[in-house]
Amino acid sequence: MALFSSVLLTTPYITSIVLAAMLFAAIGLSMVFERRSFCRYLCPVGGFIGIYSQTAPIELRIKDKQVCAQCVGKPCYNGSSAGYGCPWDVFPGGLTKNTYCGLCMECIRTCPHDNIAINARPFSADLAKPTTRIDEAFKAFIMMGAAMIYAGVLLGPWGLLKDAAYNVGSSAWFLYAFLFLVMIFIVLPGLLTLGLLPSKSTIPLKHRFAAFSTILIPLGLMFWVAFSLSFVLTNASYILAALSDPLGLGWNLFGTANIPWQPMLISILAPAQTLALVGGLIWSARTAQKVSRETSSPAWPSIVFCFVLTGVMLWLLV
Image (cartoon, rainbow, N blue to C red; front, side, top):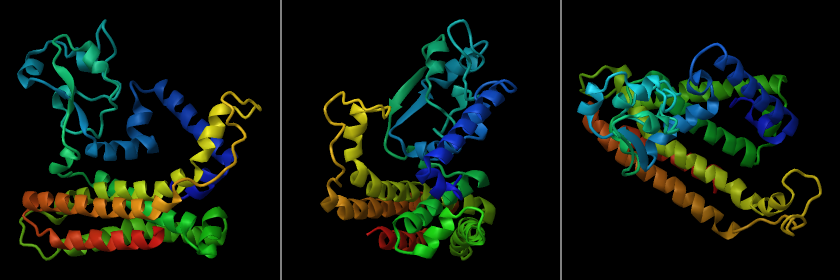
């Protein structure tokens, strides 16, 4: 999806084909496997929503572990006459992170003991316990690296890069795809790994690598915020026109269908992007300090790594 994003985002015909394919894939898998197998294992949207939901200020958790342990039948997971079992195939009694919870709240309805609740909490509470999974680690690299590459392709001044990204199937595109994958799966992980080598920690390098990849979650999230501001503020006036004519049938429901396009709040774009990027760097630095305590490894190499990436993103956007 990331490799074809330039075409997917700008060609409605291709966008519709991909969305239809995802829809039929979800329907087809639901006819073979139980629960939301497509959402949990294949959906690219669910993947990045899941990883960034760890920073959310709300969570679904049980109130009392003892009540869950004594509950017969586990209707929150298996379902009952009150509702379905967890569509995401998650047992709420063992839920410790937001990553795999779709927040459908079906378990609240099926719990016979009123032992499940939605709680407010500090931002990024889940990040206090770093991940130990390599797949989640590389998901963080994919999301952060893709934001940087998109910024260069869609907002940068390099015509050759734009042509390569848009001309899918050409030799230039294959070179672009190769460099895209090398950047995300070799260069960025390699640089982080180099910073982990000078350590006296007894924890295996693989586990420290996965743990320190956690710092890329807040950084990548704020990279996406800064990147998206370029389009939100530039194209916000289209919202008013679309509200009056949502289906493109010539309606004018609210008298705003013919409002001309004009950028909005452009004067605050650069300061807002800078604030988002610097905020992400500070957020990641604090997360790095927590991971450092968990892994008995120095935090400064990973903080320097995040500082360099933030500087590159600041150069691309501002």
